[in-house]
Image (cartoon, rainbow, N blue to C red; front, side, top):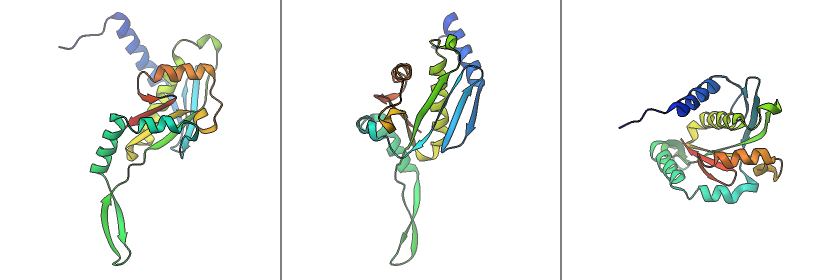
Length: 179
């Protein structure tokens, strides 16, 4: 039996829907930005790995979500290989290689808009866009800026990461999404 959302839940759902429609995306799979009109933005790009958060990545690679995404990807995807002795081309199981994206800059322009959940919505939009770009790879890790440099993530951004970690499969300031 499904329940209808109560007043405040319904209002929250409506506000989230309106905010989601207000995002503007620019850039491409290597580096992109999501803007919430007159509120703020998050931007970042693809990385090879999260050197400073490798222990978090390692922990996520042991989660049921990661293992399931890996098994699904490898069961449903192949790659072309060549036998150099015979020059025969054949299908081989694809290797699961999730993408890595970091948020390297996020900002709420007007201080009066801070502390109202806009930053979390902007980060969610960034995460959704990174997942779209990584769709063909079976999974995506999204991390804070300090995961690549060892610094550069503000206290306010860390609070947003901590809040988001409750909604996603995560370890520290790294999120994993199986696609």
